[in-house]
Amino acid sequence: MHSKHLLISLFSLLSLLGFSQTQQTEEIIIDETNKTESIEQVIQIDSVWAGHPVGFCLYTHGNRQYIAYYNANRNMVVGQRNLDEDNFQLHIIPPTSRKTTGGTSTVLGWDSHNFVTLGIDKEGFIHLSGNVHVHPLTYFRSTKPNDISTLKQVFAMVGSEEKRTTYPHFMLTKEKELLYHYRDGGSGNGNEIYNIYDCKTKKWSRMLDVPLTDGQGLMNAYQTQPTLMKDGWYHVYWVWRDTPDCSTNHDLSYMKSPDLKNWFNAFGEPLELPATLDKKLVVVDPIPAKGGIINLAAKLCLDKNNRPVFAYHKYDSDGNLQFYIARTEGDKWIYNKITNWDYRWEFSGNGSINSEVVLKKFKKRTDGFYELSYWHIKYGNGTILLNDKFENCGKVLKPAPFKSQLKVEGEFPGLLIQTSGDIGKPENDEFRYVLKWETINRNRDRPREKPWPKPSQLYLYKLKKEIQ
Image 1: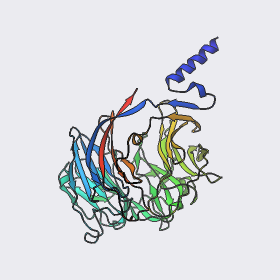
Image 2: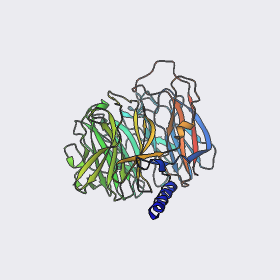
Image 3: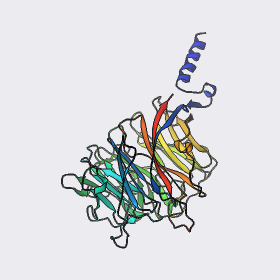
Image 4: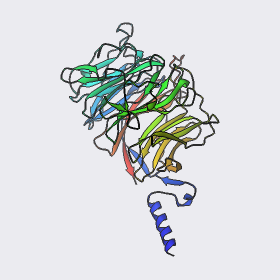
């Protein structure tokens, strides 16, 4: 009788945690479908280009919100509002041509790489960059804090390695210093450059004397931003790519730093910059070219001991694309496959491609488990539950994604809903903000013949988290 009561108590505890009692012998199912979000506010912003997708920027900063995007005429636009206001003040960056401004431009072509992004320094001055894919630096800075209307183009930051820039990003250090990160060079032949901004002198300088990664003229690294995680360290990971053909990605790699200057591998061994392919200390999984990993098709999580754990995809021995986990044990990486899918995503070629498998989130849960969320062209949205050995032990049932609540407004065939999350952090964590618009799909960065879709509407959605 005592054992029976103990078993009932265990089932009661699991039920409170959201576990399904009916499948404890086979898999754990955690039902979180009640953790829905409600739409609290919708702001209609502007008409935007719908002929192909390209990344827009949303940045919540204190009690203000900033946006950057391309309008219906493909002109670069910035906007701002106070959070208690119902409309954005919009400012069109004066249209320029690459032929007349040293290769820079504020007018979008057909390249889906040419996103636009924002940064804000600790004095409130606004920084804007974008519309580059192996193009000269395109960068603007406001002459007054918190005022997008004063953005002026600055044609040089440091003055060297700025003619073939791609993937611009701003980030803040632990000390709130503003950094600018970009790739210098082309796909298959480029280096990762970091500049740091001095608010007193209003000048940029190199943060490092050498690039963070160096393909040595043979390849380039597709790497993440240095991300400050719960252990107080910055973490970076990347894949190498040999040519513009996306199938030539290989060798998932990783390193970490306490200060963005001194770098170490996963086992605490110091590294001399730049990181190069021959420095095997940084390799997580030596996936070969054409081995099933694409640009940044990986997610990083720290385990309970702050050790790095990676989720990523590659081909299995049968040639199907699967999710794998890589984690450290002693002085080596160990791997385990966590899916058994009967599907191969065969990707290759140049230009922006349409994804068939997407890793969305990888995180540690408060109940001691880990979860990996994904979208798969064959299997849809899902969340895999992992135990503390990072084995697939079940699934988490999630509410329908926000995008699935929305309907396509336009009538042009093939229109898709596009969204962009917030790169800032609202002070009230009950809410989150999302930009939404519609476009047809990518066309490998090549022009499409007419007819083109009519401009779509750009909206800001304010979402409130509701945990029932």
